Image 1 (tube, rainbow over the protein chains, first blue to last red):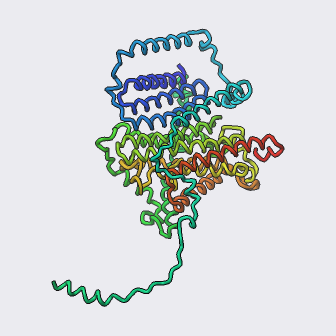
Image 2 (tube, chains in turn brown, orange; image 1 turned 180 degrees about the vertical axis):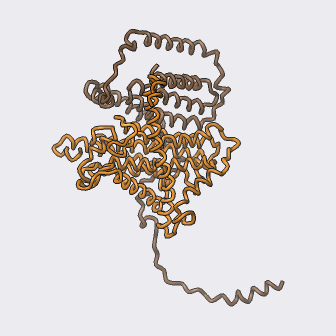
Image 3 (cartoon, rainbow over the protein chains, first blue to last red; image 1 turned 90 degrees about the vertical axis):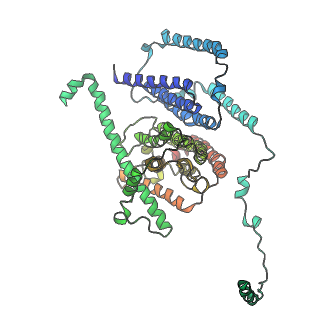
Length: 214
Length: 342
């Protein structure tokens, strides 16, 4: 057993544990955090496979952005755990069927001749798979890549259009208008003649001791 | 040594590697901790003088032992655990805040040869690590089970995720010029005097990067995550003693990290500004110190941003600026003026 094997088995054990806890833990926030741990260890395993771009992109995109927003939502939800567990037996056959199907698929991939370990190629030290991926994406696979980006863009625009409603009772302000405000818009300087106050100090001085005697 | 080599057999080489790596990690983290401690003193002194005060001057000569006194005080204070908090996550929060701030230093080159891990995807690694840092704040805010803490963590999470996009785009500009993701190669691509440094062709990106860096580290004027006049102390309102100190250390470690990155990517790293003075690690220190001074200067100068204005600045101003400048750089590289952008 070489050193990388020890690292692999450690990461794999953590990954399996985290994956299991995602579906067994009762608290949804804990489940989301275990999913983060699972992504992180999966990224570690990808690094062992010399896929450093994919590994780091997994951390950057899924751990750094997607799961943050996910946690954001889960933390604000008031989830009733008992209600979530209703209908467990009702859905079990369907879920079991899909689970078995995935296990069979994975077994076919792992046991198949195209994915046997002899196909793994070790690249020389100077090999950068970020640069390789970039050059392949922008030459051979330019059209599929651009199509995928257009699909994503459409999805972004659609999500915003579907959820953006102009509420009537909205009191939010427009910062762009606010920062453009100048002194002339808000402030009016009026020149007035100076007002001289009447000398009323004496009458007050006489009244006060009279109140004090009562 | 020979005896040990025979004892461990084939495991000797990996054990040696791990030991050496650990020693190097300590050699990076220890000076970093000292730098963090003295940055807190520098902040109080600088802001003090800017406000015509003296700042701390009682502990040690010129207040030089103040960080030690502060550290000892926080170490001996009780860590109060709120009854309704989520206990495991409450202590995980500070750990997750400080771990990425230190982990990112693994790929930072201090010199042409002094670097812990000289990996090709160094810039990506740093982006990944800094994007993980937000978990410390979110988990701390949620686990405290307090409204102020939760509001602070929500503000912080949205702010960090937003400014990360602008920051990522500025780095795209840098790697277009440098043609590499390796931080050492990015610095070497700027060789030959300060007019070759990337802040010249990428000046708008440099400005956007530094302002985003201030926002990423939750520093004034973007410190709404802990805006003490609105939500007491934000996400760390329930923390006391050393648990609070760890958040404090993480913030300052992150400040040093983003300043270091700005120095490496835009200001030529350890390269000297003029060719006839030799390159040295000291140049890097000077550049980082200057950028850190800017952080303190900002804090003493600017009033806090309002939250919607922060979001507007990030999404509607910085991201369009970076996008336009990246396209401009890409287009210019195809013309005969392309040499200006390398």
